[in-house]
Image (cartoon, rainbow, N blue to C red; front, side, top):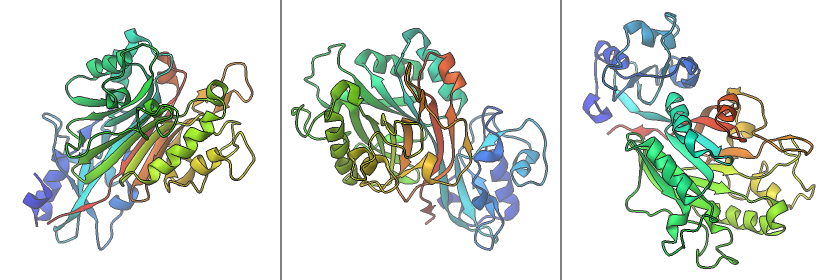
Length: 365
């Protein structure tokens, strides 16, 4: 049932929509994923009805009451996917959709465990994966593991003439087809000219922007991997400067997943350089040139897990927060989690960074 089809509905009818529209997820999610400001009674919006119930997932009435703090039946965890903001007279104010996004560097990739990594995303109810350090073989392994319910875009495919050498590394964007799909009118793009490896297309393989569509409207998904200065020297700073400018011109709303290889000293804003005009500070500091915000650092929302997302062998400090999710101002993060133990158990040396992001409300007709 869509917002247009609902129009004005009696409260009793809407209550049945509530029960029919919650998607069961793993027990550890719980109700903390529901935006409190939407559940809090007010004159404008005080009820939420949800659409598109998966077959066989309808909970008892007590399940929704749990989220309204009316009843607390144990063992019935749910996650809000797409909802309607509803006024007291039963009229639909608009749709509210929450997207679950994961940023995950795929270094230490074990082909035999990609199915387990994909299962971890399914268990966590993930809608979008922004991944780095993928060869063509790794990308296709992920596509096979995720199956037909997902789609994938790979940065190296933006230059079809590129030889299929194992030495090429890229980044990828994956999406759950029932929730989000690539916009057919706008192709995926990389930074600069892929034919100009040393100029505007410097490290173009490590960037990817995918225009996409959800029921809430257009959304740009971006994956970036900043190569470490230990490997590429001052070209790292040149690349960071270029990507800051590139992201300024990408369509909004926008979600970015990045392995920034920065900040590098363990603190939230303790960059490798103390220079206020340092390119990394201008890209990943509190006043970035691209106008996005760091979900972990810049938003007062529930945070789970330790702050670091990567550990450097034989260096101090060993723990750094290289992996970030950034959003444009028109998006509302509601929670973020750094998932360490399950990621390490599957051979990763980067935490899985998971964020719930509320998309702009689409007003009902």
